[in-house]
Length: 231
Image (cartoon, rainbow, N blue to C red):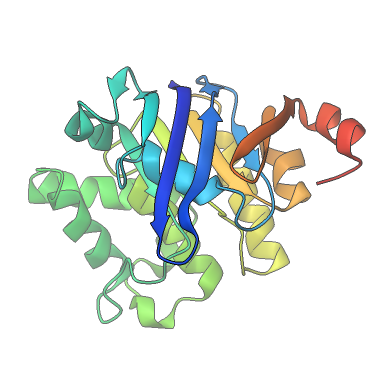
């Protein structure tokens, strides 16, 4: 479960002074109901993901992931989450997909045999078993995004967070990734950001609309479409 209470984040800006990136954010994400955080670029979506994944500290407020405080228990939070970002720097391109995942699995203190087992299972889940021994320098953007999801589930985390999971990938890859995320959300806590309505319609059971760092609306995808006429 993910829960925030009044999360606020300020950044210092030399020319503009203090900039408010998040203001009094209150959200709740439960297992079995994937939640979308939707809004335009610069709305605060990625900043909230960074707070929840302990990459940055909030200026004020409280946030809990799997029952752990992101401020007071960051190690426990990190062990509880699988994080997928749009970064293309997650993998060593001269290594195969299997080699990359085994490397990451060992960082979770898994033995080599268990790391290989987890890597094979994760590649199967995301549909990349056929390309397990292909160097990732030959992967398409869509394949890399699926590999990033495989990396995120290696340690079987109860919480998965995805930042713009379908950004910059083709239609077929997007459809496949949405299906994977929806399936993972059947049993886990899933929070993802997007500004694509297709992602929201096909994955989310609940939506928070964020604008200028504030939650301005929330409800089912259908409710949000009715309220704002599309996102």
